[in-house]
Amino acid sequence: MNWPRRIAGTGGRPLGCLRYALVGALLAGGWQAATVHFNYGGNWTGLFWVSGTRAMPPELARGTYTFHGSTGYDGQFYRLVAHDPWLRRGWWNYQDSAVLRYTRILVPGLAWLAAAGQDRFIDAAYISIVLFSIFLGIYWLSSWAASHGRSPAWGLAFLGVPGTLISIDRLTVDVAAIALCAGWAWYIRSGSPGRLWLVSALAGLTRDTGLVLAAACCAHALRGRRWRQALGYAAAALPTAAWYVFVWTHRMRTPAAHGAAVRHWLFRHAAVGIFMELFRPAGYRFAPLLTHAVQVLDAVALCGMVLALALAAWDLRKGPLSREHWAMLAFLVVFLAVSTPNYWYNVYSYSRPFSPLLLLVAMPAMAGGSRWRLAPLAMLDLRIAAQLAPQLWGILRGIA
Image (cartoon, rainbow, N blue to C red; front, side, top):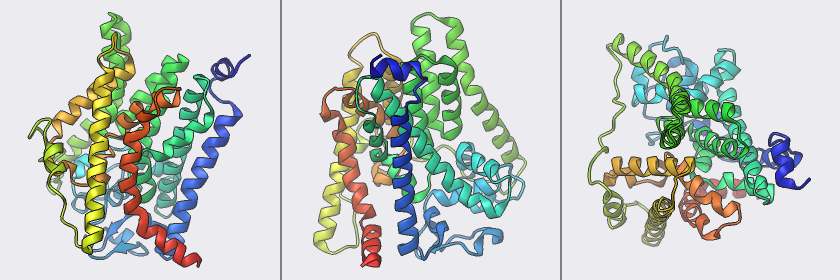
């Protein structure tokens, strides 16, 4: 029995895929441990990138590593959700956009469950969920590659997806959405409709763009006039809808609640916003040479995003559309909706919601297609590497 048949016949669980998944998770955890030890004084809360200028609940303030002079990053808000997933503590005022953060419940909710609701364990549980998402993402991607007769080592490419790197660095929820996208592609390949439905449902609870997976399955079924199947995949959005109703109902009962889920960058400068930002270099307060180098990397990253969108659009010329193609089409629609120039200012911001698209664009290369499809990942990763360079320098200096 050859490898592709064996991987399908064993449910996608060969030892090789598990081995690479474990190696990848250990690499991610090793980087986190190193940067915590050498850059954050051994305080693991540094990974949440908590602002030193924002107020935080007194219950969490003690022992939290903060970045003075910084506004912090998204991980600090998902940490609050993990400590209060049922909205009982009145922590709305500590959020930047409370409704938006609470609708992305999967990772914070799983952290709360894993810690049995005990505050002292929730931060560690959250970090563990992020690492477990990396494990699953690599495992599923390895299984997908091996089913095409390729080495399961291709699963390690999951670590090169921008949203994965950013989640390792700042504990955002995006790594779970990307992992579920990899699982979604694998279950399409292996013909597992029940598991396909499950990952589609979980993706919507991870972040709003995760609903793309259920929508793609539904559109594919509708195109084939499989009405019952389409209805079933539409039902995958029901858990997300129910949770949204819960969050919005609680918001209406809480006068202090604030933060709109719809951002100001929606529906402006359709399709041209990214090019407007490309020709408007960001102003950095670095030395002139360093500023120029970072601006060049910003432009390279934006070009990588444009290339990924172009490759996705090129794939759509073929018919009939597969479920993966329907997902690409949905992400292209999202691109048109978020085309305001300010949206494309920072690679840490725009690359995260589009990371599932970047993965789908790159996956044919892992099945023996053109290696050029990996170029968008490489182009964005160059800019992310520049962002991580100070941490690497801190680690090397500490070792020396």
